[in-house]
Length: 435
Ligand SMILES: Cc1cc2nc3c(=O)[nH]c(=O)nc-3n(C[C@H](O)[C@H](O)[C@H](O)COP(=O)(O)OP(=O)(O)OC[C@H]3O[C@@H](n4cnc5c(N)ncnc54)[C@H](O)[C@@H]3O)c2cc1C
Image (cartoon, rainbow, N blue to C red):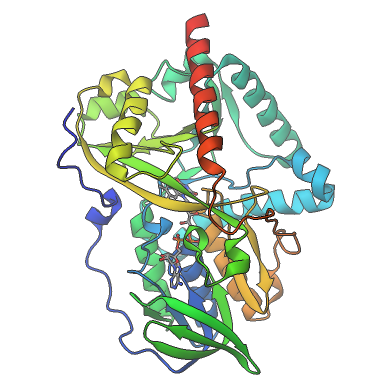
């Protein structure tokens, strides 16, 4: 299969107009300085600027350079640990408060898109979460019933015999549909958030890394590639791109590469067969695959983590392509148009974290599920800066764990991913043979 001529920039960027003009001159003093211009940073900026605070967003690259312009555009409830698992660690009340934030972020993003009239192909299409073995199907159905009883989360089970109505593959052993989950065009969504932030009066400076943050009597002195700014409050919104600028945070997030490929346009009937209800899809593999039709329903967008060690997106593309064709054999022979990657931030407890450390606000650690959670927690961080009670979240007060000797370079990752990947494939093969 031809692998040359594939663009290694996100497919989403092709559908965007030229970006808006940004702030050319760095102000000397602002009320709020935000580091990072992804969903988190812009969610915060919209809130503080609308709240009357002079707001400056400083971005090391072009705005949205990070995950917020590179993701798969799937929106779920975003909290990975189960209620039972969280209750065992934090007690039932706190566990409920944390889980409720996932549902709140999911509902918030839909309301926000509608209220603000955002043009970003937002659709409540539902997710088909597929089981890669019969045992995983049993577990999925049991977990879904528990989530429905304990948390009111809507879902329905789809046995294998009926899964083709959800997804055009015979590779899985049934699954569960979550009808509230949504799809979005991530690039358009980011561009719309940028527009709202600028309209609210926020200043946004690109290609300007923040290099140092020092506390002063009146707030902070922030050094950037473009000069020094005094700020009363600082919000760090750097997620998977967190560096030694904030060593305490760097020790608490694990940067992990995630990769996506997109096919060339396909005949309408192929997309209708593979994605009959336009659902977003994912599976129970530990090294999860996530995929969907593009918003125009002309291509397949297929994502996953492909290798134990970081690799360039084009090298990753052929592996991802092989995995895609294993699920959808009729895509064998179809060329790819795009392949790219981005860096997500995992946390050691698989939870997002937001709070204040040494006077600096932060929100990050979305564990690969930040399309709704990132702007939502950015908004909450902005509300905290404004001193509003709504800024409180179920994540507040949680310890933000690290590990001894961990300094932000995940040396343990290659071995862990290789093992999980090997085990996923072994389970997949074994289940298919028994079938
Ligand atoms: C390939 C891929 C697929 C994904 N798919 C999904 C999905 O389908 N659904 C989902 O919910 N989530 C998904 N995610 C995760 C989601 O995109 C992120 O959780 C979310 O975008 C995080 O937003 P953010 O604003 O916190 O961080 P980012 O968008 O990553 O922004 C952080 C920004 O900080 C900037 N920065 C860092 N250091 C500095 C500095 N010193 N000075 C100035 N700026 C700095 C970076 O340049 C970057 O632009 C995916 C991620 C990837 C990479």
